[in-house]
Image: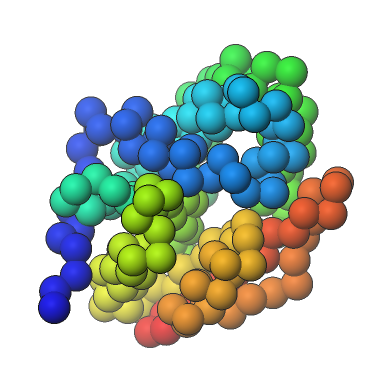
Amino acid sequence: MTGPQIERAEPAEARALTELIAEAFVPLAATTWLVPDPAIRHKILTDNFHIVVEHAFEWGLVETTEDRSAAAVWLPAVADPLPPPADYDDRVAAACGEFTERFRLLDDLFEANHPHEPHHHLAFLAVRPDRQGTGIGSALLRHRHARLDEQGLPAYLDASSTDSRDLYARHGYRVAEPFRLPDGTPFWPMWRPAGG
C-alpha cells in the first residue's frame, strides 16, 4: 500500500493551509495558554501562523498532501540567518491583539532554545483533526527526511505535546530537556541527526 502523495504547496494556498495548521493546534495546552478565549483562538492562531507560513513560501518550503489534509512548514538554517518576516513585530501585534506579549514570550523561548548548527527547522507539522492518527504526518516526515539525509542535513523542531514528541522520537529525533511557558506547559526541543 502506498502512502499519500506529497507535493510542494503553492503560495496561493498559504491562507488555507494556515487555517488547517491553526485547526490542528487549537486544542493544545500551549495555544490554550497563548489565547485563553476559545471563541477567538482559531482566528488569532491563523493570523499569527500565517506570518510564518508566508515567510516559508519565500525562504523555505511548504509541503502538503494531495488532498490538502496535512502540511509541513520547513525553514532552512544552513548558512547565514534568515531575515525576519517583513514588519514582524507590527504584524504580530495586529494578529494577536491583547495576547501579543504571550506570543512574544514564546518567540523569545524558541529563540533561546534554538540550535546554532546548520539544520532544517520544522516550524509546523499539522494534520486535519479528522485525519490524525492515519499516518499522514509520518508520510510528510519521511518524505522530507529522505531529502535531508541525501544532503547530510539534520533537522530540528519544538514538540508541543507528548503525542507529537513521541511521534518525532519514532522518526529519529532526540529529545532534550523541555522549556516551559509561565503556566508550566512544556515544549521539547528535538534534534534529528543527519541520516536519522
